[in-house]
Length: 494
Ligand code: GLN
Image (cartoon, rainbow, N blue to C red; front, top):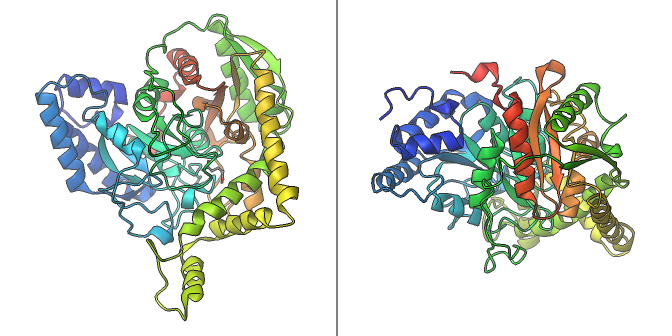
């Protein structure tokens, strides 16, 4: 056994898995080390629920498997934490909402179960925006999360707890979900790596639904290599439980990480650069693109002409689907129920008024409005048509290039409170992540430098359908010649 476990949090997923496999450290020691770190940094607000007994039981099972020599499991003994959108049997699942305070699911989400099947040990549940609605993690009913690089700034959202926990080395990797950017944008704001796969690659079974035609699960970790390990475990068909899961076999995304980038055509969309992008972000992305040229890639100018329209289109479609999905929270079957009420309708009203936060209510109202008779054609149907055109624009672009690169967000992480009273300002900041979501394409964020306030800048890579391996390969090669993903926030060394 390793004598000194005090620096275990410095290790990434792949390194930790090797240490565990070689029995230099035990899964129980590892879990204890990370749990102690989580407790020491509780003020960051990243974790919502721990269950030390359950975590240690899983770790003991991993140690028994390790002793029995089960080399086939890729994540044996590696601690992970899950966004509180994934239902879990051993931990409370709230989706960041008062509506689900204290809720315990009778089953694990498919993604959770698949990671556990590879031997991962669950450390706990991670804070997020209520029902994954937000870009700053300020919509959680359980408090905001700090950005480890500057705790007076937001970590991004809605997977803000996931990104902050990984950046602060409270856990080597975490799950997140991305409906319109919620893996890529917090990864970018916290200086880590995250990937949202093609829509349908990962099962949505057991993910508390926000907008079902957009929601996708994916990993957040420090490197592309670690993301590849996790994503390989998370993906794969789930036909009996998620009818939108793709009939594409699970894939080992680690196999092509080292492929050469010589001849790779990187599409640079005009609409992702220029006036809408802050100078510090633009400069970091330009420098990263130059690195790619040194790696043998060529840059191809392309156009995604309907980029701006992705904002109104998304903010019609996502609330429409949310208003339908959230109708299940009525106080009858599970979750919060008002204590006093006159009759059934009054019970519904009071339950929903008490259980939902402001942003969720705003979206239910927008969604109900755009779906209502008389407005359906003008808003919802129109948005669906433009969504198709946005997807077609990408297919035109992929005739000219293999991957598309640009910023993840127009600026670095903003100060807490800056956009919390102005939802439209927050919606506008989603401009570069929404297009790939609407098209169902895989997208990732990789650290590409630092901007104003010494805050991380993320570069986005978008691939065509099922091109996750190519994205991870492009990201990994970049990470072999850059050190941005190894940078560490000052306050979280010990
Ligand atoms: N920021 C976007 C929203 O608020 C995206 C959130 C997400 O991807 N879950 O809807």
